[in-house]
Image (cartoon, rainbow, N blue to C red):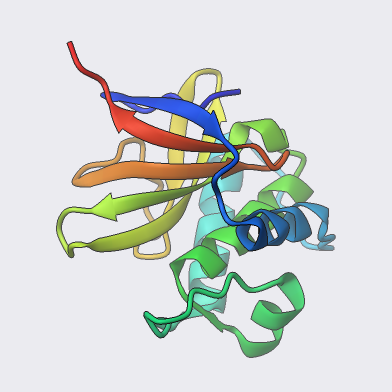
Length: 164
């Protein structure tokens, strides 16, 4: 499924670095004993809050972008935004969410002027975003422009702006 985000168009690509795709697949295959039962929004909020509390944000050296595998992150309890997004992604797949409707989304954050990663979950055509910078479940991307997405099946997408 191609991610649909307001005012953008996505195109499937094979240009995403293989190591990123490998990290996403590692998290998609990872198994967790943690479960949260309840309605979809309750599950999303629980995963977002749990991971934001459990993992300390640590900015990565800008010369190297390393997407941590499960064992690395869970051992260190520290990671940057894509590591935290990958953990949430893995937990959601373990909760039974459809991997083709989950994306690691890389955006340009227009407020802090840097790249940022978060999780996008599509449920009946509505997107929800899990961000390490807030425990609030986001329903839209204010001040963020999507650049790239990778879903749980390994498909990757590049985004561009829609032109009227």
